Image (cartoon, rainbow, N blue to C red; front, side, top):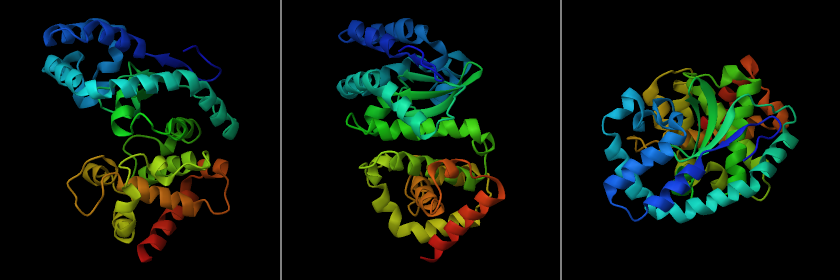
Length: 301
């Protein structure tokens, strides 16, 4: 994909499709070697610990067990190849219009970070990561196919992730790592709310992405979830964050990714009388008080 005004897009997927065509019917050891020779060699920075984290297959942290991880991935990814091709074609066809539409809603959107399309070894569908020494927005077509399906509403999904990039531009204090729990709640909830508002006709399930029954799981528990979030409002505890925002947790009382649903409901309540642009620029004591008040209201419902 060519560069476009204000946004630099780097498409790393052609290397994967070249690899897949050459390796599809080869023995496992040859397929693994070819993956490193073709896919990893083309964009090595996309496969290190700064991007794939625990699944890294390059650098010191990823060297041990790298071949085994790739072999497992190549086995597991096979059922998703058709969907990945469909998604890749759709992205090539439509991403320019997605970017233009987003700029139409947020005219001052001027990202300083690049956008990558890649395979992520199922580490993510969309994520902000450090590639080399620079922050970038990455989309994993394998993650999208696995977690959301080939028929995912890509416009909703891209608006969610582009909003994170935009928010980092205008309110970096709200997107910093190790933020208090309430800020994480606002960040994910607002991105979910904005992406649905930008796409009339989209469903709540599409905006929440996965699991597809998240609202059904979380709504009956909303008062209890709100009370726990209030009790841990300023917490920096990683386990508390994981319970509310990770796709898996060991808390039967907290639906995985339940924080996205609560944050979405909070954003909807804070949105009363405010435009999307005004919501994006809320910060400081006004924002903190608004999030706290919304949680207090939900805790009593």
